[in-house]
View 1: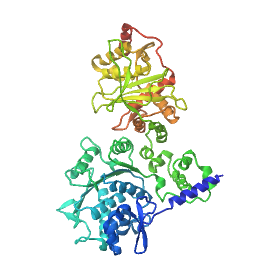
View 2: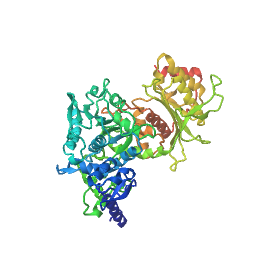
View 3: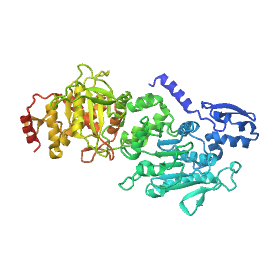
View 4: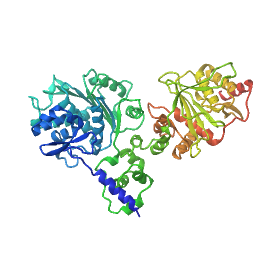
Length: 625
């Protein structure tokens, strides 16, 4: 039976969700609004409007409304904009729904602060995100700015034209009493340009184009850009979404009332839109505000609950988390419970009706790691890293004689979350990348095998990531290993073993002489002999990935790098059973975790014996033939 306190809390949540402010009188719960009496009616007006000297001389309802339009977008929208209701197909005044009110709150805070508007929006279904952006553009062009041109670019031209069609309807139904221009409100062709229309009197041009014809967007003089369904923009060697973004936004000045809105439904991970979303959610990395609407915020996604006891007893752990973690009502959970029956598996439901952004981006079939498990792992990423480099002085060919130390630096490529513990037991794992900017990254991660976490599970305590010459990478790895108490140094040796001109062999040989605790593996040609490094191949890779899946699922280690969590979400299983990062993504951090945790789990932590130079050379010759 459902506890009584659950029913009481559900009633409270429903009351809170039932609050729908009247845009005509204003939202009294908005902290930026203040009460003001006009002609016997109390309105809750934006603070900036109350400071406008014209408010005191407005004598008619029309004058009052005209002044209010400049400060109160929800009031202008319900007074001047007509849209088609999706449920009834009837023409109705545009009243903002709950997600739209939340988004307008963010935009208005930026506008009032005088900042340029920059937005990236991960869309869900049926709440009118694209509609809101276009109508907000119209408010800027009709009420605030003349000669303020806009661009609508979608993945195909028909979609862009449909978005502009909303604007056409807005103009055709605009109230004459509130239109100040001599020419009537409408779109007119602009100088025989098939893709551009102009609003006479306002002299604001609106251009449509598609990602399939990127040349049409070049050289435009725009202050507003609505970039729709960006995740579906074509990406080819000749035309990329990043190139189109640059051509569109480079001409938009960073000034008040300029607006770049990038929006899309999710289309898997690893594409341009996904990377931009991740960047926007990294503090200080992007100029865009991220905005996401979960399924339960959309008002139509609810069902009446006739038997609360039966619903409560039928809920699984995920549905219980909707109540405890996400604050859903029983009515919303009932809708979700019934909607799931239309899908063959829960992952498909989450991709279509996401609760979190990670669910929205997750593939229905190919993701190796569960988005819920990765987001749970990401809790450890709240720990702030120190950035710098681990340095030490070299005093000979066979030894480093000065103790390593961590030197903080804003330009350093080493992130340090935990300093070495006396008597600590560490594994340092190296994944070798390339030297150039476009190559894979080289990564060195440090795993504390017995951390101070509550469960005592392994913990990632440091990481170096960048592009560097391989001999310098070896020295970086050596320095980090010595800094963490001569940790077991594990080199993923595929790249070095196969490198040309013997460079890889030289580096492995040098490390084996210079470093006191290097990982050796059995040579495949002779089980009694060993060779330096961990070799990732058709036999070892499934094993290390399977172990990593279990560690992520069971919270078997503590992760502090949000970028490493992103790589987990971008890792895919291919039809032939192999694994790889999504197109345009990397797996270098992931592989260091997989190898280090596998060696930790299997207990192969030290070499039973070491070799002199001649013996090591003979083993390397035998294993590299």
